[in-house]
Length: 276
Image 1 (cartoon, rainbow, N blue to C red):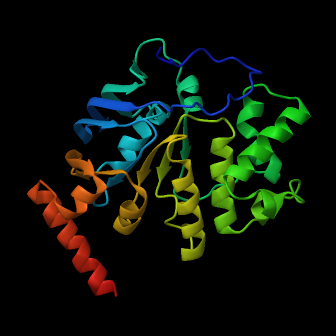
Image 2: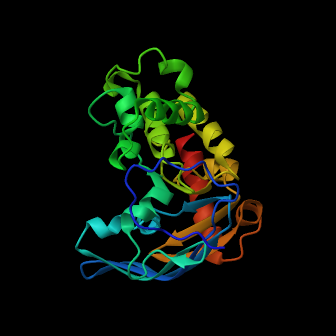
């Protein structure tokens, strides 16, 4: 039976992550910023529990597509979205679907860590408290579960009341991951989550994300093709707001089908050689 975004129900504890996360199907998705068209009829599928990497040059529409998957563009009245995004077969843009309920199922981690004002514990429990959960024991259990899954519990367990701003950049990004995981989302969207981190912190976050495979469906925007190769089950290339190619990771990098993919990978290889 399909699971559908339901009405907002305050005070309800975040459910345990599902045994089978949902798949995503994007059908004919177009996006306009005012009169400027950012996406042009994108259609693709994300299999349940896989990691799909979105790659492409700057300004190609990767982040725009990502934000469509949890209706984040609804917050900007200048943006118009056409097409369908099916989460386990249910169109999240259908009339009557509550965007808040969608975002509870589809969490997001941004490019740069943005801790909220307040303590470490306050940050992790922000979502559950917003949904009306007030019981201290329940909130403590949610915080510990999320921080453990984000690889941060052992580092902060004795200072949960300290300001989140005291954490290092890498710890802050894992805190943002924990904040997203606190609501047990079925889908996790990641917009270049390691681009602002040092190599050690980035490597740790990559290992944590790899550990979420199968438990959640992940969509990752990245400029780092090596990261896409390491993490992703499949890779989708966008250029100029169009989907050029979507294929399993090995085939994408070793046997691309579209000449534009070949040119993109060749150009990326040349830039990497020049930087070395």
